Length: 233
Image (cartoon, rainbow, N blue to C red):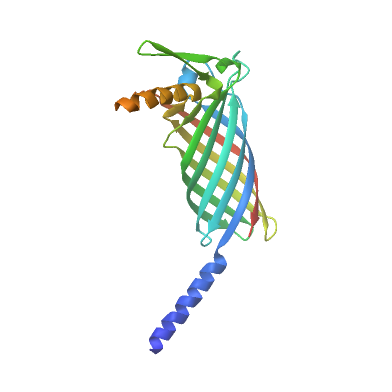
């Protein structure tokens, strides 16, 4: 019985110490953004420096390990060497572990490999202001303008790095570098998808279904670098 009491006390002390080391933070980041795509580069289209905003959350289990969730959004346009008015926006919602290495009492390095639970892409600009006319079995369907399309799919990966500087017990600032490997495998054209849905409403009464297979896969590599601020609870 004495050994049991001793084990319970030690367990309580361990849990208490563990809880005291645990810290939750919420932060915001403001960054520059670069974007690369192999197909665009092959035809001489290169993206210029863009911008990125982010909201991030973290929970430290101890000084070396924790978990993180990040919402990041960036936008890049073709550089000045291209005449086309064309931009790509990429948004990710990612989660993953956080590995930390302290350097003294004021500085810590956080490495955050993550998988994106939600990845969306969107085109904008005059170059994509036109609609696509589809021909489905002899029936023509006018789709939405391309700047209303949404890309999604995956998998996408986010590799985050932050050098965090403690200002006060509650406030920290950080230098952030995030590398995003975004893959899109699905495209949503609102007008076209709505038309196909209406057709299937009729076909379903005959136990039939029209299935459209759109072969779509595109990869973008997105590097984001900037500053962040965190509030530690």
